Every structure is written in C-alpha cells, then in structure tokens.
Image 1 (cartoon, rainbow, N blue to C red):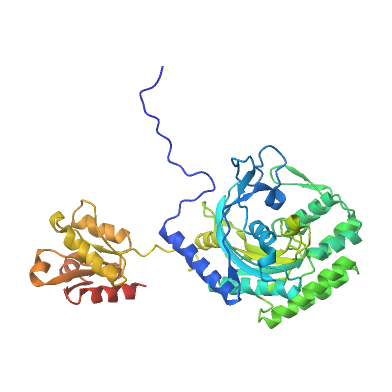
Image 2 (image 1 turned 135 degrees about the horizontal axis):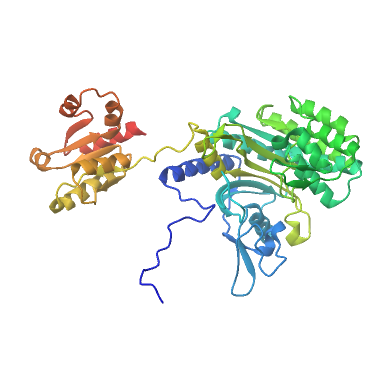
Length: 492
C-alpha cells in the first residue's frame, strides 16, 4: 500500500561540509587577499588548476581497487578512467610542472588558492572541504629556497592579522631522523613510519607516551592498544634525545643535534641544510622567535624528502561545549624532491608551504580573537512605504550604486517597524526614507543606523529618545547621496 504523504527530505548539510554566510566568506577572502599579496611581492606567479585530477596522479592515493576511495572523493569518467577531487594543491602542481616543464621558467615559482576535498572523518576545524593557499618553488635544490618559503609564510601570517605570539613556525629536516634511525639499525620502512608517527604525537602524549609508542606500544584511556615501533631501548633513548634537542636559538639547537646525530652521513647532510636555512632566515630578517628549529616536527605526508615546516596555533580555542582545546596546525609544508619524478622519472627539486585559510579562520572564531569574523556590513536599505512609488525607490538605490555605495530596496510586504528591523539585521549603515513629507519638502530622510545603535546602549528615557530621533537627518535631494557617503565612510 502506497502512502499519500509526499516524501520530504530532512534539510541537512553533509558532515564535514559547511554553509557559510557573508561574514565568514569575507574573512576568508580577506585572508586570501593578504597572503596572495605577500606571495606576489616575492615574485610568485598565480596558477589555477582544475578541481579534478586523475586518481593515479594523486601520489599516495593511487587506486589499488576497483574504486579508489581512501582519502579522496572519486568517480569514473566516461572513458573508464578514475578521477578525484584534488586532495591538496601540490599534486596538481606536480602534474602541471611535468606536463609543461619545457615551456616553464626554471625555477618555476607559483602560488595558488582554492578549495580542496578530503574524504576523511570530520572534526573541529577539520572539514571535508576547505580552502588552502600555497606557494611553491619547483626546480631549485638550494636550502635558501626553503628559507624563502618560510619567510613568506611568516609574512603571510602577519598580513592576515595573526599576532606573532599567536603561533609558532617550526622547522625540521626529515634527513636528520632518517640518519638517526639508520645509525640505530632501523632499516625497515614500516618500522620507520611507526617511529615518525610516534614522534608526531609528542605534543599530545608527552615524552612518556612517545617512548611507549617507540617500544612495545601504548594503551589509551579508552583501553585501545596501539602497537609500537618495537625499537630497542638504546634506539628509543636516541630518538627521545633527538626530539628533545630544541634550544632557545637555531644555532644552539643545531649544536645539540650534531651531538645527537652522531656522524650519520644523511644526518650530517640534513644539519648542513638546516644551517644554510638558518643563515638565510637571518638575511631575510626572520627572527629567532618567528621561526624555530624543532626536531619533533614530523609532517604526515610521506613525500617530504628534506626540510619540513609546520605553523602551530598557540591561541586558546574552545569547542562547542566551551572546553579549551588544542587547535594544532594552521599550515605547513616542506621539500618534496620526488613528486614530479613520479611523472617524468627525473628527480626535480621542489619546496612549498600550504597556508590553511579555512583552519585559520575557524581557529580565530573559536578563540574569540579580534581577527575573527564579525557580522558582514550590509547595504544601505531604501524603505518602501508605497507600492505605487517603487520606481522612485529603485531610482534612489540606483543613485547610491552609481556613487559606489551598496544599496537595496526593501522588497517585502511589512510595515515601517519591520523594515527598520530588517535593515538592522542586515547591519545596514543607513536607511533611506522618501515619504509624502520628504517629497513635498524636496528632501530625503536618512537614518544613521550605526550611530543609533551606539547611542541606544545608553538610553534611559524612551520617550525622549523617540522625540530626539538621534542619528536622523534630512538632506536636500541635491546633497543626500553625499550625506549617505559620509555615514558609510564612518562605518568602515
């Protein structure tokens, strides 16, 4: 038996995909514009690639089944090739560079921004769709190229309005830990990866927790057991000495690391690269507190081959229950000299930084920072008294727009009180009134809504308030646009 009740879907957004209104969108645009301006000031070229890439071009997400779906959103094209929404902006760059290498200036310096998609479990500050803004140099093996990327990241955060003491940009080199493990006799790839994962949890688990994960394993608060890297006690001690080698200055940290690494060839190569990065950072006026050498930094993506960078937010943030939480990374990158070679077979040095625009925006909101998104300024609202005069109202709005002032005519059916409430909810700087009295007098009434909102907070006598009509002026028709411009200018 069929039901006569029509199907009504539940209005809901998929998990990990956010609806954003004007305030959040404008905040992200502001951040993007600020960071892009920094990238361009360093001479980087803007590049835009498509949202989809062939799945076999996405590095670690190679299809190993009929449908590749680990970490990416994939679909099959009509030619039976699998393609996926881009996971980041680096894999598309590697494909573009390989495809166009002969015609590109070398090194190729590009920046790009746009949405990326990850088919992963969402959480606070971790959506399945978010915005990134990257800068990369392809074709330079110089450690100074890494330093320049770091300097741009520091300048980008400053331009975006993030205070210097609100984050810390940490730098490491994967060659250091590789050399340390080789010297300790750890050759198995799976065991090395287990060590990297353990080190990456230092901030969350502390030295004791990392030591357990380097050895037999660790049981968490829920009782779940994570198998460890199975290192010998001497190797565990070496790794812990390494990750705790950070000192107050970059040079002091390098001195300490040189004692821990113990003459490993690959480790010494990493130390030399960090030393050159440190010298270049000094020349780029990036101070000791702006960018630090921190051996505990381990970037998760497996294609990093040398220097790695991570920007950790230090602001206090709250979750939906009002609890203080650690927000973590708001950007990172490093050197990935093997990524283009997947297409060409020839090693091509590359380094870059990914600025987590959406994560930074979410973190500023969660922290209640002054840089958080505020209500978006609305247009000037022209009040509609009489449906017979709509053309006159539209003409007023047209005059404002011609003068470069955003404006709209109220198109609902409510009365004056509701229209003023509408203008207030839009955060309109002003409302414009053209009634019989104004037409007879050749004037326009303008309500300065920002001034009214400010003054209303101190009202003690509502009768006197209504009589005085604060923030309301009558301007001659010849001068009314200039009066509105003055009000709008003060509200910015």
